[in-house]
Length: 472
Figure (cartoon, helix red, strand yellow):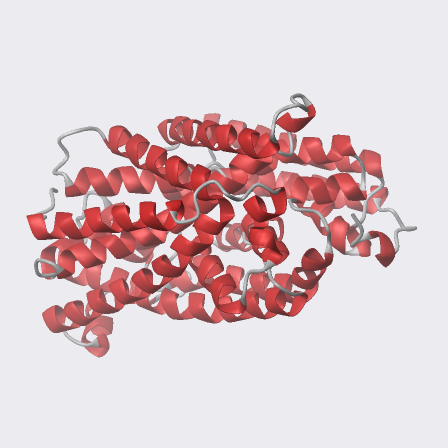
């Protein structure tokens, strides 16, 4: 299906991109110190903290639309509740300690806690964990839809990814924050407008609720308990996600970091309400035979929104996706450049290595979407493979109960990742079900998590004390 996009709508979209360039170039290349470039000098205020975390953590908007269109309100249980819970736990137990730690990144914190080898080793899975691939894929599909499908989505995806590379490498983390403040306003206003027009087109929430199938009103969405639990475990991503750590480290105080995460959870709950009901309206208005559920929101907007308003909504979609794309590009670039390559290129400015690695991350993201051309699959595969190996080593930096003996950090990162990846390959070759990656009826996350638990039990450093957990 092609979009009926007017010239006015295109002008609105183009203006958004021009404004992004202006915001990122506003301070040019003047951030010379690492702390300024990577963490904005650790001076991020509470409003800016909330804006950048809320927008960054909700970048998978088309994937959310795909889910809510197909499975209804189970979006809240599977893609919402686990992340609320673990984000709140992150705020209570980790956010303040991360702000007190002198490390600028997760690999640096691991290196300071254990040794340099452990830090460099952790940088590689973290680099993949924050791959921008899902967001490049969404932008490619969105622009292919808007342009009428005249060129392959990969071309559009590559162009938008390179645009993000350009403005991030110029402005650093400061550019990410400045654009995120704009983008969080756009993402909320766009979906409020979409729901207003959807209600005018179809009827209120009561009419909608009585019109969708029972499965869309089922909190489980018809999914198995094991599958639902996997998503709860994948929500452990919060504990090892560098964007959470980066923002906590950049906050002006531990209190700002803690309160900022808790406030962000409330914003995510509100936005999930908007997106879940937008997905239900998409099903009710567009019908159950949509060929590309991942485009449920864009197709709904194209059908019910007038000229001009339509352009504003598509800008809100772009803002939601690009807020995460630019953040993940930046973090993956600094992880590869500063935390891994710096050891091998000691005479090169680490900020330059970060900028080069941002481009490398974009290219790798494009390769990944060729292998897994689904947003949900990308989240599932990346999370299942890389979270188990990072979980205990990262928690051990800040919580003494999880601190490992140094050798076991290597075993955890390598062994857990190998276990989950092997199970994923076996599940791909010999799946237990037609859809999915289970082997012998077991999701690939569980073998990695089991290895992590065993290594923690036998490799825990019982002599660790709190004084070593925030030093650096």
